[in-house]
Length: 183
Image 1 (tube, rainbow, N blue to C red):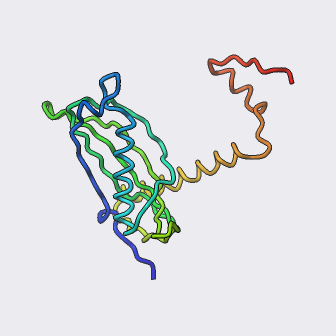
Image 2 (cartoon, rainbow, N blue to C red; image 1 turned 90 degrees about the vertical axis):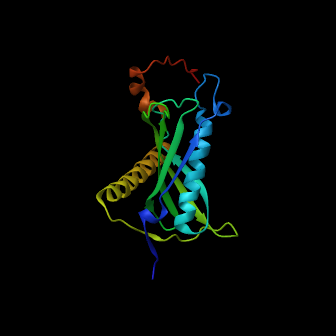
Image 3 (cartoon, helix red, strand yellow; image 1 turned 180 degrees about the vertical axis):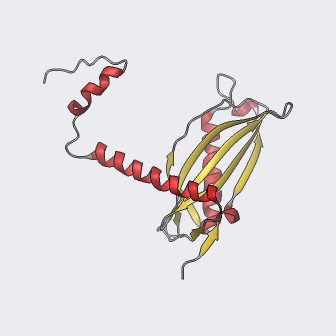
């Protein structure tokens, strides 16, 4: 009989005060630092759900919506949005808070696909997911749709008959000048 877990049992949140050492040359918090934190919380959330070591298989939709300032408190919230046989999609929301004014900004939402591994590096089955509210259901369904879209895109782009000439008319909308050699 398969084991199932509620989404609530593996939710994780972390908060960290942003230091000057985390900033880029523009004085904002470096996106790479935020990605590192996101990978850590995705690992923790997936490992908590699967009760084993997990690795990052892919990262979808990393859009930096608002800059994070030095001195702001960054909070990341993660939950399991979807489970496959050996993989899990961890949804992550990143918010920053100005601790003097209390203003909270949504800075990023992202989806990390994590795969559970045993001590020998083999993929292992993960527990199923118990969905018990509408938000969790929507997140699960959106994960399925993102996966289908990703597979469709991969099939189109990796197809042996993919030809740039099929897309040349689309380039008229873009700021690009095509100067291909004749051969």
